[in-house]
Image (cartoon, rainbow, N blue to C red; front, side, top):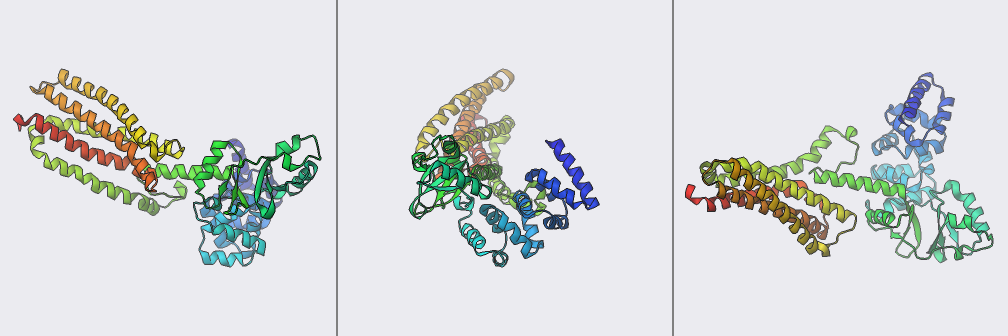
Length: 456
């Protein structure tokens, strides 16, 4: 596939240099819109604007829907009102609303003045939904049927409206005042041998649906759980207002996964692709958390200062500090990643906190004992210190304590974050590692001072 794209890229470069617009139109019609968008994103804006005049509106609209948001915004700011409106009228409502949502409100109002009343009304209704809601990602280009339609009538109707719909594989049966009363698969209609059979007798009334103001992650969860390609979206009166298709769900999953990964690495969420993100934006996204963690890390210095006498008298304990804190941080990260994934897949709820805690304590105790014994054996067999047994005990107990604490925090903090409506990823690795470092070092040196007080 990549070889095909290289061939396409080379041919487009040659056609543009020769200004062979007729062949460009033919080539763009033959090329997947995603590939065409990838190529045009690398071209100067004047080339893109020129092609907007050359290419058919429907082809350009398909390509436009695959552009990154910053490219869409650049086109809107440089194209004429008529060109923008021609694209908006060809785009599905959700794609048009997504593109406009990134722009200043006064600019959007000015553009929509040139659109027809129907387009303006549809786009405005989508722009009014909260950013992270199901309503903001749905499309209104669904296929609806009436319950009293026969199979023959339904097939004829689907054939007529299909070019303007997002999908026809799943059809939605509407009753009085557009209330959703059933769902029927196209396969069921086509496989019915009786042309006079009614849609009502084929439809499924046990409907999986979401509401316009539900969180969009709920749409992703239900799509995965029930393995469906499109999910109906209804308003508070159970009227069908749109559908969420699987391609929109994939976008949600990708964005949420990216956001979680960034937060787990103590980075503020950045929506633009990495290579298109400015240095300043990356600095702004990373520096706040780094400052917080730096000041939190200063607590380690305070801890070490407090036990300066113990460090001077027992320098051997300093050599084990990196291993202790590193093991604690890694242990917490393992548990946090596991619990956050389980939360995101709806495998865990707040009520499961005690079960999670008990399981992780048992895991931590087992791992801690193994690590503690290994470190005790290491000191016992390879150290010449007269108090090597006590030192081994201190290190072993500290290792057990650190792993239990790290895994307990890694299990509880994400669930607590969910309880207070925070993203569980916010309390992920960096935060837990900092807490574990401070507490484990305090415990480590306190235990050392108690058990080896005769050497202080």
